[in-house]
Length: 550
Image (cartoon, rainbow, N blue to C red; front, side, top):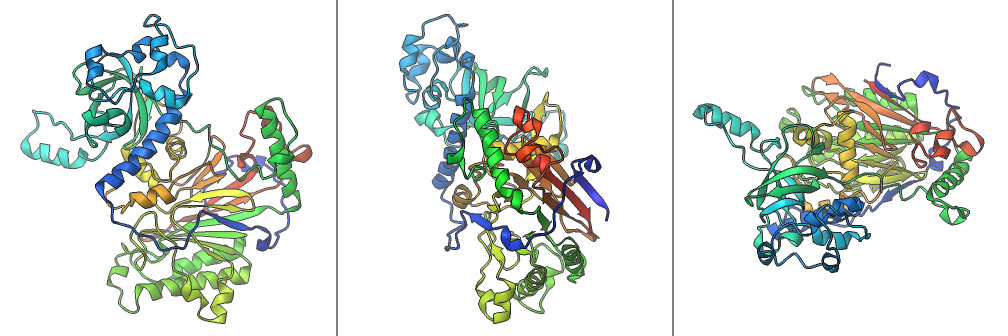
């Protein structure tokens, strides 16, 4: 088979100790926060939508400001304006620390403060700030400013291409309601001006919560000198330490992580390696509704025989040109016939199946996050009940635990949406890894706001269903971008591609998590994990990933 990408890159040097395949029933699939209750969607009052975004931004801003060094809170930050300016800002409540700190403008704050206490130092975006101050909000794109030298036709074309896409010339920030108070508007934007040189290092996208160090001499434009964003290091899988009570007392947090790592993997020693296959629709060629490509993929399932198959939609793509003219049966019957074939195949091969819907499924709810498929039809006959015994219908997006390993995945091409909106300066390294880090640090599967034009995002469901309370071991983000496998701060991020790429076949991914690493010592611990040079909860050092072309 032809590999689109592999992980680790020098996989021939990583001689994993393989074990015989165990029954799939040994790997319990737990769907986290999965509800089959009816939901209301696509009724979004403006105030309710603004409240959802503001609460999300406020939570992340508190995390950002809690991690800022105390040197960031200088006298110039605490008293950024004159008393007349403070009169026009009734929302900025006086802090007891402000009266206690009477040093020079260069004297740092030496007293530790909490995140909520520190938020009193944030200034509204519309206030004139002659000295460098801290301003918080979410990034947005304002209307592009066109050059007067362009012709009218060129201006219209340029405006059509750039008015919705974030660029350095139209970057703006929308302030927080809790900071702006009555003096600001809920959707008021303040333009951002970044320094010409690369002295300000940043990577931002539309909708990202940020804290800026900036001046605002006119009250209309923030001259940015520093950009502070959320970091990923405070997250870890919640299900990783199921036996923390058995961990012996340790003198440091690193030792606690180390022994949790030892005890967790010592429990897995009796298990075999876990094999997971991931595939994303559509599952037919663009010029045909024939299921031959789906059958080709099922033959690959038979060859690999994974313990779990994650099947992401769309299964019957509403954007498919042939599906739009399909009239032989209903879309729901077409969907059921295709899924019946997959479920029957998996039942005979002893493979558990996780079915993830897509808002593009022709017969399903056109909303994101997307509720699970209705499974009542799977109970109509004894044969169907047997085929769907090990089938799990979940939300899109969702987080599942497979034998203690946490997987997060979504069918939406969030990487492409992020790549279209991200702007950066002075950043080095892998851009795809940086985009994945944006998803993890934003604590949500979809952090781009406003969303892409073709995505029916419901903000009430987004608040309830699209949040990442902790980091998964593996994050799966299918995209039309080039397939990749990245180790992003301990999280294995995978783009398996799509089974169909127009009129040509696409790709799928196989993930094998080994119970032993190539450098295992007693209890399966590598030197890197014991020394703290890698995340002790990460599975990257014991996982082999192949992205194969069909």
